[in-house]
Image 1 (cartoon, rainbow, N blue to C red):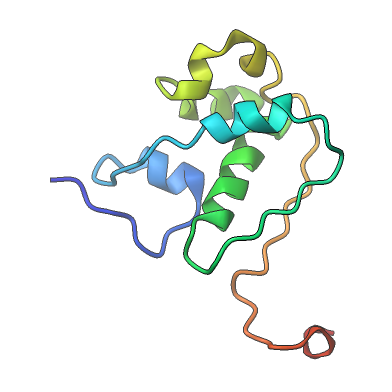
Image 2 (image 1 turned 90 degrees about the vertical axis):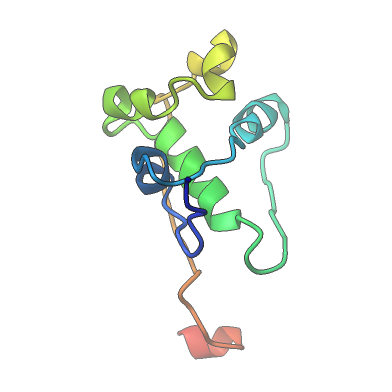
Length: 110
């Protein structure tokens, strides 16, 4: 039986571990590409998969290791969308995560 990867938020690690269950959310990539907005704010409660979704976007769009990263998406929903796959590995990605920050106020982060 596959394990639910509780506490893991790195797309590559989850998708590359055969014992982990991965629920395909790559439809988010298609939605992201179809949305004409320039800024997107993703707000969800804790533990709703924000960091995993951002990690997925990172591995999809990042130019670094694009050929290797393409293999991560084989068999997933986005791999069946030719238009989306033409965008894979074509964009520079700046990836920041605040998931390990425990401060309650912005001033405490500085």
